[in-house]
Image (tube, rainbow, N blue to C red; front, top):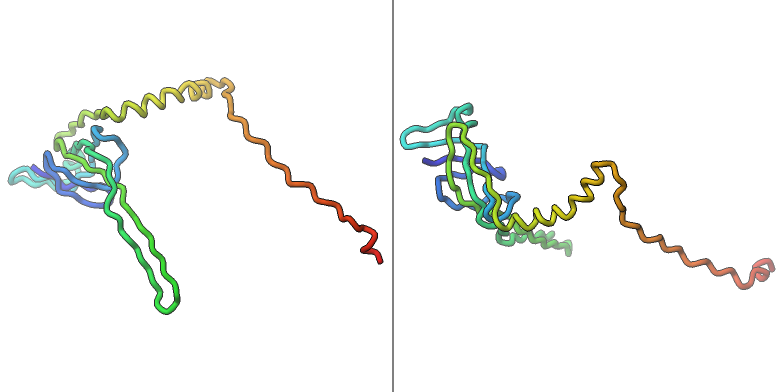
Length: 164
């Protein structure tokens, strides 16, 4: 059984236990993601292209790692103009492993990886201030530094000499 999914503006042919590299998906290694945009499903001899049937199919995957692609150099030169520009670019990528292709409207069991536990704890520390703000209590705001004044202008030494 394999499916064709669309993510990041590209289409991928996937089957169970395939590893693919796609455009960046938010999440940490170990997190489960679901792809609902299935374009085609083939199960043995049976191929499904019906949009209503495909809307009930979900592809579940696990994030393996967050990575960056190879550097791409964009070099532009205008001949005889003494003008050139060199820019580099590295795409943000996510490596995922397809765990299952679910049919019949089933939804995958979404789980968070071990690395996801730390940022949640950091958010919990900031939560009391947010709770006070929602309750209408006054929240301490950080004080801004006073603006620096410009130096005073020096008075002209010979005011009388300009009249002569």
